[in-house]
Length: 79
Image 1: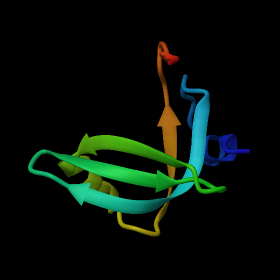
Image 2: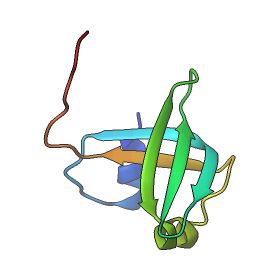
Image 3: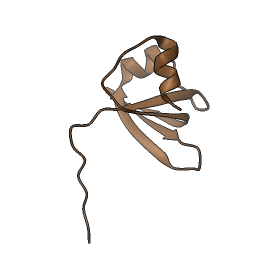
Image 4: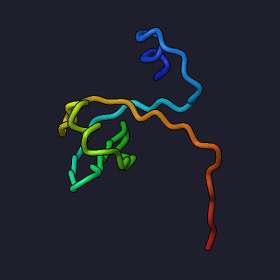
């Protein structure tokens, strides 16, 4: 479903997790910006990117964007 984005852009990337959502908040700092992405169903993903990247992407609340996740490992903890 989300891979349609990559196909439309005619890109090839190694990340398998492409998640579409809508920006809930953008909190700029001196160097980095925290972006909270709301997913369908209400879950959230938080990303920290450079302030210059956030500015060049024109990120703002309500804008539809994609979270592209490439991780070599994911840690799981239990109580």
